[in-house]
Structure formats: structure tokens, C-alpha cells
Length: 465
Ligand SMILES: Nc1nc2c(c(=O)[nH]1)N(C=O)[C@@H](CNc1ccc(C(=O)N[C@@H](CCC(=O)O)C(=O)O)cc1)CN2
Ligand SMILES: Nc1nc2c(ncn2[C@@H]2O[C@H](COP(=O)(O)OP(=O)(O)OP(=O)(O)O)[C@@H](O)[C@H]2O)c(=O)[nH]1
Ligand SMILES: [Mg+2]
Image (cartoon, rainbow, N blue to C red; front, side, top):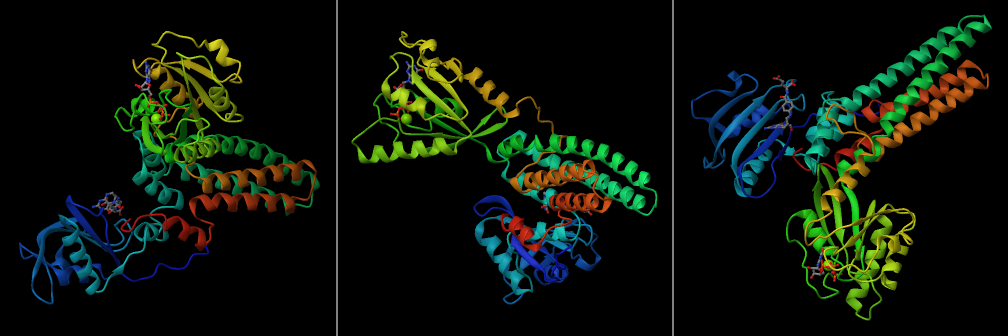
């Protein structure tokens, strides 16, 4: 491992979010945690901290040692090394949940010898001390940021080691391949080496299947984590903002019968049967002289380029206009669903006419006003995200680009190893590729990864995590 040792200073931070809450927690981790608690905390029952067992809670006061002033009435939780989140001594001060008591207690812990923790430093210590591997540490942040129950389920699965276990299995298989090849090298007979290479070729093919199955979860994993970037576009007044409100089940965007109502981009997370949609309502697309509206239209065009899914709205009560055709023309190469809205009104727009411009994309007739077709739309979106796979909590999920890249590269090296075998190259050359694949997989769990990558991961965390 390229990583240095855990620094032995004691860190402190407010672990709960800042603002008013029922309770708030200041967490201190490191060898001085108990000494610090002893300086600040007075137990009501007169208990001495040195006598208190791990995972026990004491009731008492935080007293400023300089002034003797009582700062807050608290509960103190003690967890002794190595039985704690960081594997170090930890004390938690459970204060009343307001910014002032929390800041005061934090300041006192620092005066008593702790330093302010960096973002993610508690979890980084948990990683460096072997409690969590890197994929599990990444799952911690995914849990905190989870947008739906399904996102949470996937992240919890990874925290329990679902992804890590599969990666470890693969690494073990690769090590066995290497061992088998290296043992064969020691024999003088050519055919033993050849037989070993043939065995390894079969194992590589199996490993490749396993890697492909894991990589197939990456797309869904990313969407569960970040949300499906969905943009609603259409000419003015077709009901885009009405659709956003209907999917959100709240009156978020202003809806009027005046074309050009939405001028700014509106962005919201919507939970569609467990799939988080980052949904963006745009200004109606049309040629316009109004400078503000023009900028909105430009932005809508840009957003289409970045979207995972585009929902195009048309107005059922009017014939297809040149504006509609201009909107449909923006879709090329993008995933899109075409929605003929206002189907409650006397119709002038036939699906057949629309389909001439939609390149086999799904066309649905809906009425946002009456709530018709929306359930079907939601189902189509959910099916699109899972594309056949079901999200079970027990499954491993590739949850970010870092993990996907490492898997992809490992698979590349295995493919090279296979080609090396097929070309009848020397066994040493096969081993080089296999070792590279083994190392790449180790980046996922953090067994073979540089300090820069580790820092990059943990600095994305919040302070106190
Ligand atoms: N108050 C509080 N709540 C929290 C945390 C915390 O640190 N403090 N957590 C974190 O941020 C999460 C829970 N994770 C934790 C993981 C391990 C241990 C722990 O003490 N493990 C020991 C004890 C095991 C035992 O007694 O059975 C161990 O595994 O050795 C604590 C919390 C979520 N809730
Ligand atoms: N009859 C009927 N009216 C609808 C339907 N959906 C929306 N509307 C009405 O259409 C008008 C425009 O709706 P909006 O949601 O503001 O349309 P928009 O596409 O966001 O318009 P801009 O922001 O101006 O681009 C409002 O009066 C809505 O009540 C529908 O399904 N049927
Ligand atoms: Mg609007």
C-alpha cells in the first residue's frame, strides 16, 4: 500500500447538520479523546470516565474548565479502541441541537487538545484502520446522499460489502491463475505450461462474464446515485410546467395559459417508484425577440445535450407546428419520449403524423390536466432505467465512474491475457497482464491505490463524517 500511517492526533467535529434540531453531536476520535472528555464533562452520577466500559452512555454537563461555566446538559457516549467507527477511542457529546451549544462544545474540545477534523476524516480513519474498504467508504457517502429508498438500498448493500466481496473473489481467482502459471513455469516440459495456460484461459472467460455482469450495474448505479437527468422541452404553453408539477405532486412551477411563463430553468428531484429523476423544466422553445426568453431557450438547447432522457411535449389540440418540428429535430441521438399532451381537448394531432418525425421513439398520449397516461409514463421511465435488471438490496452495485473505470480496465487486461495465451506467447507475458488486472481491481477496494485518489474521495465528504 502506498498510503502513510494514520496521523495520531485527535480530531473533533460537529457530526450533525448545522441548524436547529432536537439534538446535535460533537464527535472526537483519537488517543486523547477520553482525556479531552474528562476535562470537559462532569457526570451527574459522579462516574469516572476511566471506569466506564465501551459503548456506554453517561448523563452530565459540559463545563468550561477555564470559567467553570456550564455550557450544556448532555449525554456522553464512549467507544473504546478498536471497537469504534474509526477503530480509535471515540467520545460523542450529544448536545441540545442548536448551532451555539454545538460550536461552544466543539471549541472546548479543541482547546482541550483536539484539532478540527478535515472533511471525511473519520471515515478516512475507518478506512486506513481497516474497518471499511474504499468501496464501502464510498457507500457511506452514497447513503448520506441517497435520493430514494432504492438508492439507499443499493448503497446499504455496498456498505455491507456486496461489491467488495465480488471484487475480492475476482482478485482471488486471478491470484490463483497466476500461481498456477508460475508453478508450471518451473517444469521443464512444454506441455505442462500449455495445459496450465489452457486452464487459465477458461478461468479468464468466467471472470470476464462476472466482470461484465458487474459493469452492467454501472448505468443503473449511477442513476440511483445521481438521478436520471431528465429535461422537459416543448414549444410554449404545451404543459411542461404542469407535467413537472404532476410528477412532483406539488405546485412547484408557475403554470398559466400565457405562453412564455417559464423563463428560468427549474430543477427538482422527483422520486419515480424509487428511481430519482433530476428533472428540469425549461422555457418553451420558440424564436423570440424577448432577450430574457431567448437566453432561456438557448439554455434549454444546451440541457438537451447533457440529458439522459428528454420528455418532449406536444399539444394535442393544435396541428404540428414548425416550432414542434424544430423541437423534435433537437433529439437526434438522444433518449426521448414524445408526449402528446392535452389529449382531453378535441384532437387535431394524430399520433401517426407525429411519428413521422420521431425516429421510432415512444409516443404517448397524455392529459396532465386529467392525470391520464402519467402512470404509464412513470412505468416506462422505470423500465428504461432498470432495462431488465431488478434492483435488489442484496445485489452489488457499481456506483461511480472510478469503480466502473477500474473494472473496465481490469477487463481489458484480462482480454489481453487471453490474446497472449491464444498467440502462444511465453507464460511470463500472461502473468504480466494478469497482475495488472489484479492491481486494477484492487483500486476498487483500495488495496492498491494512491494517496491522491484516497484524498480525492474523502474530501467529497462533509465535515464530521
Ligand atoms: N451516534 C452515532 N450514530 C451513528 C454513527 C456514529 O458514529 N455515531 N455512525 C457512524 O458514523 C453510523 C453507525 N456506524 C457505526 C459503526 C460501527 C460502530 C462501532 O462502534 N463498532 C464497534 C462495536 C461493535 C459492537 O459493539 O458490536 C466494532 O465494530 O468494533 C459504531 C457506529 C450511523 N450512526
Ligand atoms: N386542457 C388541458 N390543459 C392543460 C393540460 N396540461 C396543461 N394545460 C394547460 O396549459 C397551459 C400551459 O401550461 P404550462 O404548464 O404553463 O405550460 P408550459 O409548457 O410550461 O408553458 P411555458 O412555460 O410558457 O413554456 C395552462 O393553462 C395549463 O393549465 C392538459 O393536459 N389539458
Ligand atoms: Mg412553463
